[in-house]
Amino acid sequence: MSSDAEARLAELDRENRLLARKLARMDSNVRQMEEMQDATSKLLSGLTRELEEERAKSQALLLNILPPQIIERLEAGEEVIADRHAGVTVLFSDLVGFTERSSRLEPQVLVTELNALFSRFDSLCEASGVEKIKTIGDAYLAVGGLPGGREDHVAAVAELALAMLDVVRGTDWRIRIGLHAGPAVSGVIGTRKFVYDVWGDTVNVASRLESTSEPNRIHVSEPVAGALGEGFELESRGTVALKGKGETATFFLNGRA
Picture 1 (tube, rainbow, N blue to C red):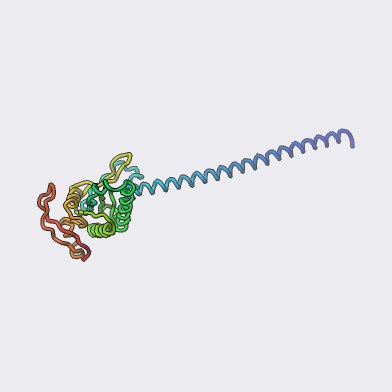
Picture 2 (cartoon, rainbow, N blue to C red; picture 1 turned 45 degrees about the horizontal axis):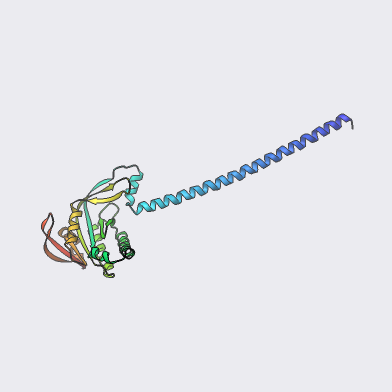
């Protein structure tokens, strides 16, 4: 073989080795890119999963504060939530002797007992299709007849009141409950620590029925008694002086007929 041919073969061999090294580097780079893509994909997948988990937690927290239909309206961009309801049934309850008893109990014991009691009330609200609105100290406010609840809201709230009374009778506490039916306004107030609340004379009358009730009794107005009819056992109390209303005919709800 001539010297020129040998030189050409040597040159081709060098070029082949150089090309092989370039191909090896390219293959290594491709593998690194694939590994990076895989890592990025796993990272994005993890971030997406964490985001969904946080979104679910946020949704669960919102559901503990607001009714589902209110959350939907807020998420849709509605800024002012305010509704007028022609007819709802309001339950207002209060624990008898709470102030005196709370001064004797250790704070942890008091909060534990209240939490256990009100958690039972919350479950009863959910089961009966009645919306728990809020607690104010030892007072508990719930409303039937809001959107998403039962149409027979007077009966639903009456059943809730009877069930709450059964729960309390199994404890050392006693309770007063007042029920009234009529129009009301509901809405969301505030931008921080916002709250869904209900206002109106119907709420006020329910509160006054509660405060003039007797321990472990359910004090109801004439509109509630009339709406319940023969399905429930009602006892006339005659007339009671309600603040701002004067002498008012009221009843005790004793149970199912």
